[in-house]
Length: 445
Image (cartoon, rainbow, N blue to C red; front, side, top):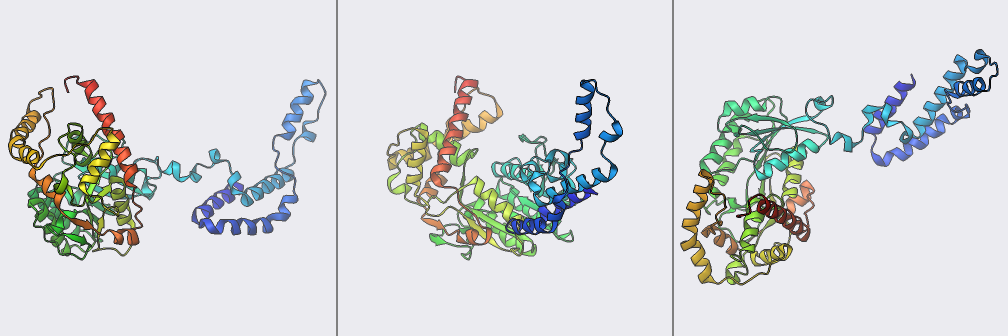
């Protein structure tokens, strides 16, 4: 009975809102006060006294030492009453069901609590954002991620369920979706891959009843060559390049799938970012990027990867937002020149002005052979990394004066943005750590 009462109290604590627990405990104290007049529970008192008396060589009467059944019941009931008034005094080691949220975050698929967690399929789980989504879902107390990728093995730092599939085949996606409450589409690649993957996903969801919540990771590039301040009601022009057109087409295609939520992030940076941290960092250290003067006055719509993941998790759980789209970018976007300046400072390297002639040389003379060397280095192991080519699309982006309005995400999803100085500091620390590690592993780099 006592154990049942304690278990009941644990369930009450789980269900009660935090601001009601003080009132509930006061009411329990008043109701159970008469029980506290009973002597506190000391189940081993007689045994300890008996051992002491035997040690002294005195004859003792075991019957007189032992607690009567009535005494034991009264004392046990008094102890339970004390615990009901002060639940914080419950011994957690004998009540494993009452683990805190910190312990819940350590659960893994296959444990006894997994059945209560929602399965969420993550497509593109091997990518920069997909990996972070999988890790955050696994660390939550409500979701169990299923990491899906076309790769035979996922290099993830945690043990999660993983499936290998061709995301362009609707039947394969449908099989992976069985029993899933949600799916996150983080698939990247060329235009054909993006469109084929989205078409297969929407077709698979249409065959399921009820359809799972779909969170589609789109991009700010769906707005194409738009300028000025842009919110989610702006037309999806998709006229920037093939990638931009493909992403816009996917959003138009999704209208046949009512359970989709679109997220349109800007420049996603943070530790692990292969382009906006690693590649930009190498160019800054090589002094191939710097103050671009007029060419760098476009707006850099930065958003930290943790903020993107926060938005994805909210979009999976928030009711009534099917069909909505959300821009994701921190407020007060800096110019690209300012981004380069702050990141260079975090890296501890000086920033030099880069002339227009130098930029033309990088884009049109150096870029083609460097791109060929980059491709060949993936085929043959040269033992060294060729310099990254600076492509014309980057210079176009640095001059685009488009500013994302992301107030809708703040209002509806409750997003709190990572401060830029902290994000750049963490990014620089990760990048420098990676750079130093590569130098130690390969002195020729």
